[in-house]
Image (cartoon, rainbow, N blue to C red; front, side, top):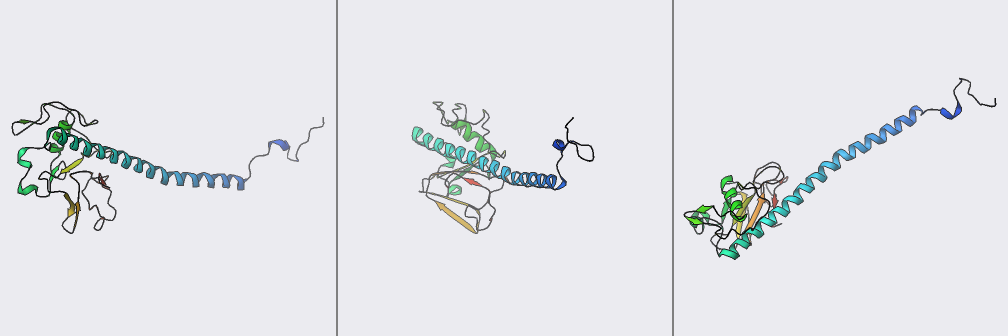
Length: 202
């Protein structure tokens, strides 16, 4: 008989949240959702770029291992020392995707790829992991990787996306992902400040 009731008849131990408390909770939840909506996409993008960088490094290592094994680049004879390839040969975009696929098949141990009558990987050595059987090896944004080699052994490669900026890179092989937008951009960002390309050499 000693129960205590409020004047309105409700038990004192069952009091609900006040309007102010509800507003505070809703505000906190809104702030958390806002922070997550900004942080999660950035974290995903960083993860994709890290994965891309690792795959580019693997491609470069595979090309170098091929040259060590066979004493030549994994390209057709006509690409080795032509005037058109003064600064190295591109394989994949920005030239053709089919060349990049052929290169990936060669590096993956496909013994059927021939260039100008020459079997490109006669021993079937698997230099590269990750490419599909048809040579498709794409970055996380669905674009085929690009590779450039110093096919005339000039001591370095030039990489540029426009005539207004050039970068001479003192390495024999480079690999590039064209990033989310799928277009080749300037590595020094002088022209394209929002460059999203990923490079093997930096």
